[in-house]
Length: 60
Image 1 (cartoon, rainbow, N blue to C red):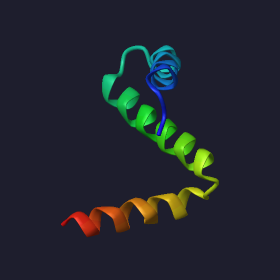
Image 2: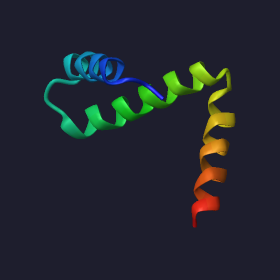
Image 3: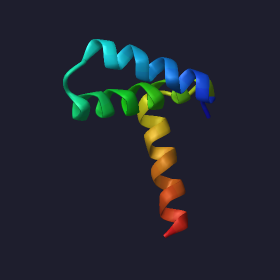
């Protein structure tokens, strides 16, 4: 999981890239966080998404 500083850096970078579109900022922030967490776990993007899906199914 990313720490608060890493998340804030991602937010600042995305806000500069899309200054007038809050919805687009949120999408790209989420995407960047997922990609970074994927890299930290040494997984491929789709492997990580499948892992998250399995965790969600266990909760339901």
